[in-house]
Image (tube, rainbow, N blue to C red; front, side):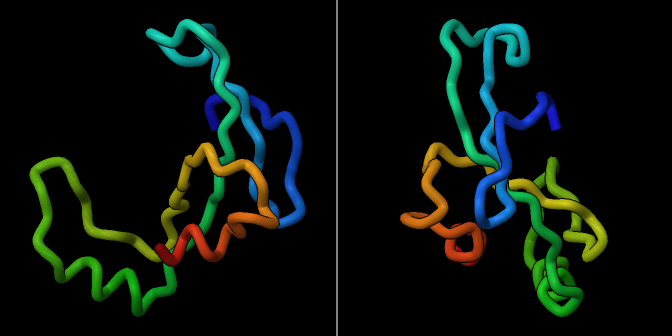
Length: 85
């Protein structure tokens, strides 16, 4: 992670503050929520069969994926629901 979490939320996601010191080009702090997850092996296999861009890589089941959002409340937007979108 780029910066130390401000706190861990009830669903295991982290609140992080991005600042000009941690993100080049930023002028004001921004609080975001970071959700880390792994893909199930079957899901990773299906995704690996899809067309890829020049900059993408096949999904690896062991890889850590991170979803960054400004939806900060885990009760209004649970991590699992966001991952499944």
